[in-house]
Length: 297
Image (cartoon, rainbow, N blue to C red; front, side, top):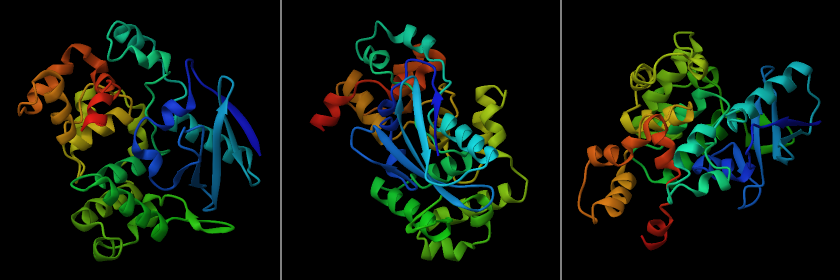
């Protein structure tokens, strides 16, 4: 079955798909380099896995599932896609703020500003933990292992699996996650998170609509084992809070080249460079035109 979802304009699917590396992580699959379509394998409440194919459509996106769905299942998948692509996000204030900045003037023209996210915060936190202290190739390998070992298989395609929910991961153990899934030191963090959510001690989905002030919400993220300042800042962006910067070695490098002549700097200088963007500084950093540095190393 196939249906469409509307988005608050301006909206351009490839801008969201290419916003960061999540599209390269299972169970996402990008159909082309331009990001005009992608698929995602999702486990329904019934335990059945289905593949959603998302493509651009006038005023929004088209969602196609090659399987019969109940009305409730279709509604649940619609909510998933709306969250993943931030279809209702109002970026007018951000666009107004950055319109006269040459390094950000492109964002409105390209309908940038939306950051691709997973349907659940649990998935985004696990993936974020798996980005820490490793190369991107290591992250892709670990995520792929988690999905293939624990995710519900897609009927008719044994090579595709959904991202496992907390209940599935909670039944594992630290030794398996550490040595078989090869998550290393991250294994107890992922296991503790899964068990806390599965056991009802932690309601991660409530954070999506939380009215907590941003600093308090950040503290909640930092209280999770395995989530440090960098990971918390990334998660805040995924939650639509842009008050903090994900300061890592890349941020130190690009800010140093942009404003400090390549001299060694620290997190303080990175924060200062974007402080005047206020509540939008996370997006200003995310979509700043660093292309000349990426190309020139």
